[in-house]
Image 1 (cartoon, rainbow, N blue to C red):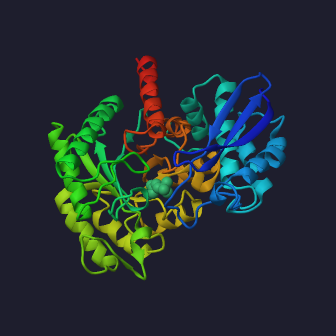
Image 2: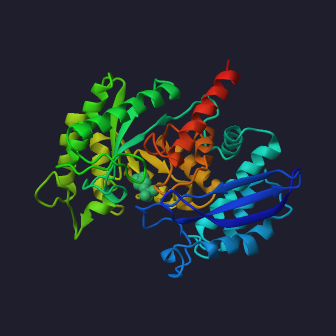
Image 3: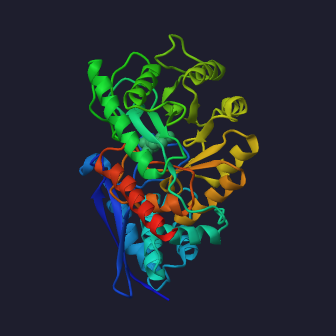
Length: 426
Ligand code: PGA
Ligand code: ZN
């Protein structure tokens, strides 16, 4: 058995230049692991608390010194002597030391940085790669179907950034290009990068802005949201691929941000829309573009609209809950019983520990939902979620556009795992 001898956290920066927390775990073997946590911009109201200092003299109040102090003085010391292979026990201890549902005392950022770092330590102590170790933890919690072969999940690329992530004028947050699941990951990545190049060309031809947003996708000004879908289609063709065969389209509307004063507003329609008006719009673009993926089509409390849309298009389209579900078991259970969606975006930092994230995946799996493991718009170069996604046998991953170091760190890690799997599965 291996033992944790030291837990140490400090403040680092994320991809937006905002402070975040990184935690180092030292084991009695002398080996160390490091993990850091991401941060969202379009945050669901029911997410676990991200603890920030609110000291306006530092980083406009966004510092995380208090979270680091919580690790160094309170949470870390309590873990010394524990076995890092005991993820559930470690996480339980962290949860009880915090004592609140939303992790308000210690901060979900503080807690998750430890939880992820301990998970890496458990892998090292067991002599396993991180993704295999996560699989083992997941099997222990019946969070995954152990009969399914280990594969690289299909990537969902956020090629055009709007909403809170882009400086452009698009209402929808993400315009996604998704390679066919039948392609092996490295092929899916290469061909998607070729499409990414063509999107840039297409924007240049139109005289549109082609600089990038928070997740590495282009952030143009366009007349309508549908124009961005049109550009995706054009780029797929220009790259020499076929829509509906090689590539599919998806959207993260992140509808909390188009919901104002009791109705939805989008530039594609001159009048404000209620839930069913927006549903008609979705049906019309779905006829034209056949979305296979539609995330947060309604705001996080518009349960009726969610239910109706899932009943209508759920047989062909993944209706994905992100802000609706916030990786929270209570929200997921409600959505399962109300049939409000049929897929879940899994973000460990919305709930705050590895164990609870696995618990949510188990609920979603049992409901027959698709699983998408996701980054946040503010990221670090930590690739933990790449291994995590492979380990839990998620169907998809959503790590942004195939550009910018913090996104590429995850896609490159998947390339490495693909090589490793090819060598071991022969
Ligand atoms: P966020 O966005 O990380 O800014 O919350 C990601 C998403 O909505 O999927
Ligand atoms: Zn989202």
